[in-house]
Image (cartoon, rainbow, N blue to C red; front, side):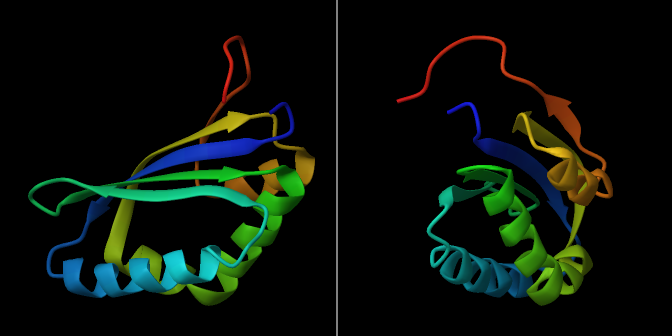
Length: 118
């Protein structure tokens, strides 16, 4: 668990973009499901379709960097055209390369403090 990196990113869907964003979500879920070191990738939507939260969990910083590199190459432009990021919270201890990659998205970093995971 100590090497894992995870996050929750909270999004506001732009007016008129829900249908396009749903198609993009399906594409992103299918693509990310092929990444063996992506441990969790779950999307949640509000009843009114205006708010989306995405939970992502990666085996380590290298896995996270690989995923984000693919995101930037394949999906970032359409993603950011459909939503505004309202909050981005990163959990764990991402290494310097991972933090450099994530810093542009304005995250809050929270390091391990206690507890357990099964």
